[in-house]
Image (cartoon, rainbow, N blue to C red; front, side, top):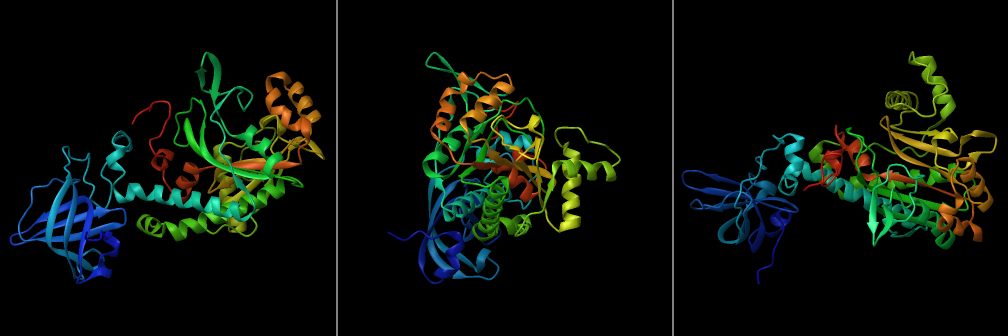
Length: 428
């Protein structure tokens, strides 16, 4: 059997008889010759024919022929004398021309026809970058002694105190889709010390914005024996550096196609305390956010610009968020108990990561839940891990789609989400 070669490898087989297989990307018929442009996972290849063929675009073809050098062909080589076999004919045209260099379609059209629309190289590119980012995340944490875990996505207790969860019927019992693997990854610190997970999380938040989804992919990590949240921040920096390095190496073609150069992750990402950030905003923006428990999107953007201007960094840690805005398991700052040992990481002026140090003593959990009016008995399964001794620990979670969106500069997170789920979309 003739060996199949990929389009990108065609120039290495000049003079040989090979087999291509892929989609008919474009057909061009001239007076005395016709050209087929074939698309596979590696790129485009040109096939030269002596007469036109009737196949519509996106037909799946297998083509055998001889490779000939041609500087004007994609990659500098083309296939001649072809024998063509139709593997599957396209019975409907795509919603727009996939061969055009830009995408002449609106976002709703793209999302409605995602299985075929994502074949366009520019629409596929962000997901190649995302895949590389996940590989870099895994490699960085593997190198730091972390163990990958896979935890349940159906849970009996809401992670974030019962708000914004999707309820389901679990064999006649109430259950929820997991908002995060938080409880599980904390428990696993008591088993492995360092764990991470890549998986879906679900948020029943009724937001209809360009930055929110009902389901997204979370890159979670948790580590034990930390001194405080700064140890967690240091690991997060390594994870991000690994993601950016992997994107540059494994998705170089996709980055080049989109005209993107991943920004450098500083050796030490600048950090500012929440209270100091509020003071800066009050002095320089004409607004006074002091006393507010969180940062508004406009304030995040301003701080991102400040970090770039003052520190040359597109990343900024904001630390010490007020305890009233953090989950019950967050560790307070012993010196300023109204503030937490937590952080958000801003990337180009948008919150990308939330993390911090967690409580680790059983008695502290009982006190924290009671102070919030929560019944500790509702968290009995979760609290059991802390009854058997847990080290000081902390962790973080990165939203993959948001990271990809910020890196590629897209206006809407749905452009970097495979088959997004939001207030209005449950298909395809």
